[in-house]
Image 1: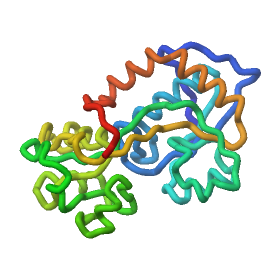
Image 2: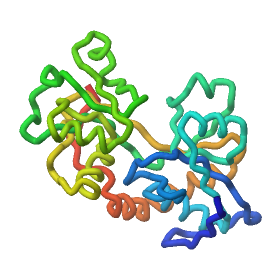
Image 3: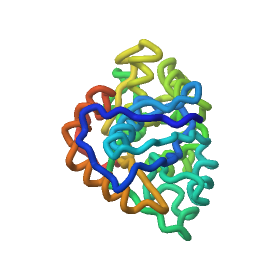
Length: 251
C-alpha cells in the first residue's frame, strides 16, 4: 500500500528528533465508526486519531490491513511498528513471551446486547438466543452458553448480526454498541430498530496503540492524547461514539 502523507487537523505539534516512517498494522474488517478497510483504504475514528498524532510529529505512516490472526503474528515478529487497536487482555497467551507496550486508553468501548425497543428491560432470562460475529466469544454470556441456556448464532458480518436481531431470528445482537448503531443509522437506514440494553450482561473494554520497539513514540502519543482531550471529544461526536449508557458493572 502506498504511504500516506498526513496533514494536521487541529492538534498541536510534537516535534521529533527527525521525521520517520512507521507501519501500523490494523484489522482488515468493517468496524465503523471505529475503523474499517474499504478498497484498501483504512478509515474511521481510529484512522483520524492516528493521522493527527503522526502528522503532528511530521512522520509518514503506512497502514497495513491484515486479518486478525495474521495481524498478531505480523506484529509479534516485528514486521509492523505498531498495532491498533490492541488491549493487554487480547491474545494474552500469544503475547506472553513478548514485551508489548501499550498506550493510555484511546477510546472506551462497550460490547453488549442490542434488542428491539419493545424487549427492553425484560431481564437476562428473556434472552434465549444471541447473534454475534463468527469467531467472537461473548464472555459476559459464556456461562449461560455453556449451560445451554443461550444459543449463539454466528454470522460472517456485523450486518448479518444486526439483521438477525431486527427480523427476530434471535433475541438480541451481541456486538460493539457503536458499531450496531452505525449499521442501523448509516447502512441499513433503520434507526431506532435496536437499542442497547444495559440491564443485560455486557463488557467494557479499551482500545490502545501498542508497540514492541517504539517506547519513546508511545510516550509522545500518551502525552498527546492527554493534551488533546478536547480534540478527541470532537472526533467522538463526529463519529457518534459513546451513546448514552446507564451505569453498570456488565452483569
